Image (cartoon, rainbow, N blue to C red; front, side, top):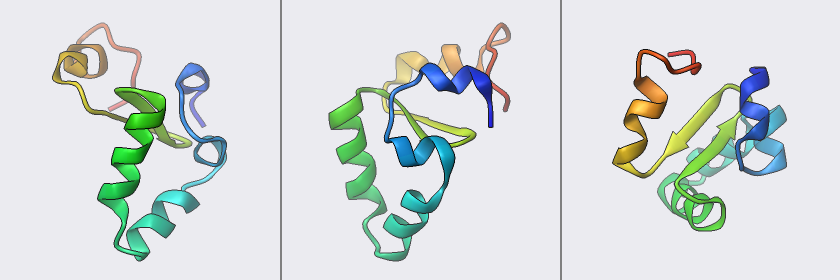
Length: 72
């Protein structure tokens, strides 16, 4: 669990478990699930206790930049 991720939007289950991602992958609905998450929560979404996903290329420096607090 990463404390800095607490502020990011996403489903509650994603903050405590990877079960929703495992379920969507097992059902073959992972792409549809990711699109739905981005439509609901925006371009920056928490998808697991230690995982984030983004759909906007302008967020790349925020995530992968030198001063980023995100663990890579």
